[in-house]
Image (cartoon, rainbow, N blue to C red; front, side, top):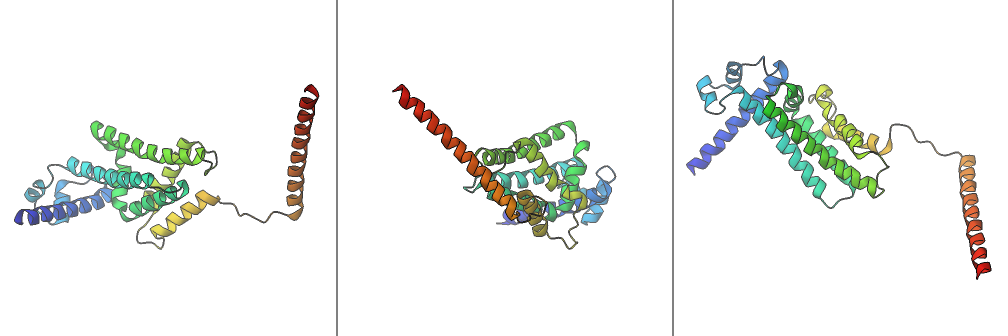
Amino acid sequence: MLTGKRSRKRAAVEEEILKVTADMFSQRGYHATTLDDIAVAAGISRAAFYSYFPSKEELLRRMYNQVISSTQTALERIAAEDLPVQEKLRRITRHHVHYLATHMPLAQVFFSELFNLPPEMERSVTQANRAFSQVIEKVVEEGVNTGVLIPVHPKRFTYALIGMWNWMHRWYRPEGEWTPETVAEEFIRILESGYLQRHAEPESEALWRELRALRQEVAALRTSLRTADKTDNVN
């Protein structure tokens, strides 16, 4: 029991250190933040800090792992659900927007420090990002193949979708009036309906459209009758 309590306490302290560090990295940058800065902000001694994290690089590694694990797990769960494609994309959008909006310092670190990572960590993150994109791409491809979505290019559409979400770290402010729900629903509305107003079709245009369709049906019927007559003559 005591071991369990110590384990929970350690996890809570580590989580608090990560939260404090994410705030500092997002404001000052990784290289400009020292371990002393983090220890003071977290309210622990430098020696105590080392008992939780051996280095500043390990803190950064844990942050990236946390973002990747949380987002990838949720994405794969939604993609595997027995849902229509459009509902999967809605739920993925809502979850990802909500995650980024409620973990903004972590998201800012994830995207701003991406090109400052050690080579091994950079490769790992690149692979994780590719896996994330591929899950979405498969959902989009399913929608295109089944006719639920318009014939977009799955990979290009996936890049556009992820770009819409991930750029939030540059402009979203948690203390502002825009809630994650407001942002997510507007993204969904734009994706599904476009951004142009749809006006009622003039009656004359509707009549001409119906007339063209009728002419096409008559032409097809005449072709069918001619083919049938030729077949009868041969027999």
